[in-house]
Length: 373
Image (cartoon, rainbow, N blue to C red):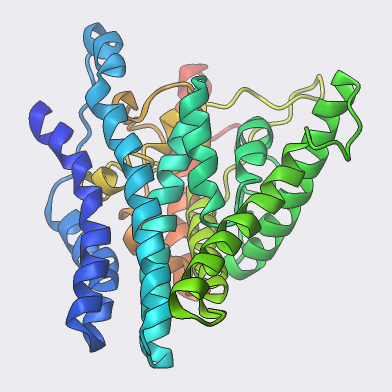
């Protein structure tokens, strides 16, 4: 099982292969990658039992240092850049119907957003400069570089509170959440970076302001390739920047769907001293479905990630006491797009989990739950 799990993380490379395979087959085959992510993966998650095993404490130090696990994330950076440039080439040289163009753009977003942002998230939490650089490169390809600031210095501090744009509220639809999270997350990143520069005595409009760099980088990136392919095609290829920004939109919207799922209805208690209780594995939804966790580098073990953000993906733990999603992210993303169905499934599950947790807490304190309801 140990070696199977190691190899399983390389399954992420199936997605760019399916995108290319679907394109060269043409027509409806462009939807092969969509069918894999949103039909086959949920079916496999359902049929294959969840993996609730954790790395033994005696092996954590050794496993966390294994280069095998970081290598796959490093390779992905170059694969994503390559597949995106290939996409520019396709868009600039091929005539596609609107349906084909949309299928190709959203298929690319499943690569850059579904896996790419997940890898960027993993690398962005690490202290090594190379890993942070790779994280920024991946986020640049989806026009969401401010995530590097807001996620690490904002979301992880304010998660499961009303101050956090990326925590979805109980009864909030994904569509309301999307607008608030995208808008307020960007504004929060601006303020966080300004605060950092003020402490250093550096003016906000200095080029040391990462937000200025993060806004310009994707524009320079796509501008460079638009120029290259314009020279190749001997015309201005306006298709390249449009394709780039559209796939970016779908990619970061996929991220926001995941954000919506991860913390729906979670809230930390406000303590008498005016501070919130410490983040624990109880403040994030957990999912230990094996197949989707291979494709997402165990991002679905989100409970442990928020409790211990420094941990590498290969040593994240499953917690039975954490709130558990009924299915993996692929299936839950589809559910989140239909608010009535989402509320029907998740609100009941959330209330049952809260009630069970409340009773367990009272039991620990030797209190009678009936008298304290």
